[in-house]
Figure 1 (cartoon, rainbow, N blue to C red):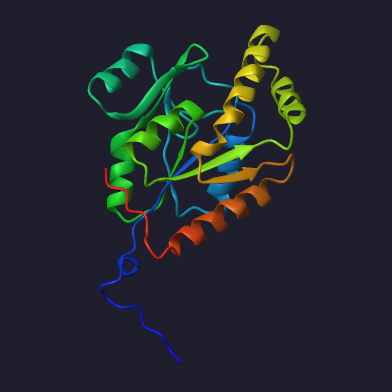
Figure 2: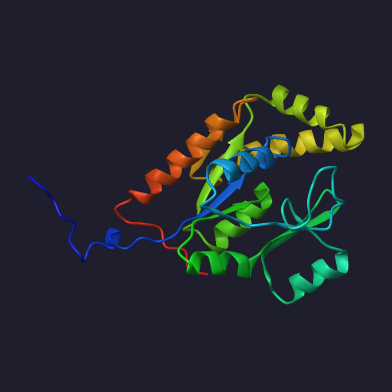
Length: 209
C-alpha cells in the first residue's frame, strides 16, 4: 500500500536548517569543519569575524574574517552580527546577513561558535539545530591544547578550566558528537546523520531571520 503525505501536513514544506556546531577550545571544531567542506560542499559555512591574530596557514575570508577592533565594533554597533563576544582577549562575531542570504536561497547553514555564542543564539533562534563536539576525555583535550604550542602555560590552564566548565553546558544542545583523534570522518558522518534525521521530522524546524 502506498502512502502520500497530505498537502496540508507541515512536513510538506522543506525548510533550510541552521546548524550550530560548538564545543570547548581544542576539541577540533575547525578541523571537523575543514573536513566537512571537502566532503559536503553544499552547506553554506559562515565565516566568523574576529580580531585575533591570524595563525600560520590561515586565510582571511576562508578561516575567519580578520578585522581590526574598530572594524569589529562598527559591525557590532550597526547590528550586523547575530552574536558576538570577547573570548580570551579577542572579539568573535557571527555575520547576520550571510546567514539570512543563505537561508533565503534554501541552503542549509553551518555556524561554528563557542559555548557562550551557542547559548546566545539559542535564545534568539531556538529552532536552530545545536550540536556539541566533545573530546573522548579531558586528558585528550589537554593534550590537544598542548600540541598547539600557541599559548603560554597560564593561558593553557585558563583554557582547560574553561573547557571543563563548558562541558557542563551539554543540556543546552540537541545532539552530542564525540570527536576522536584522527577520526574526523566519523564525526562528519555523525553530523550528516543528524542533518538527515532533522530533514525527516514530522514537524520541521523553521528558522526565520
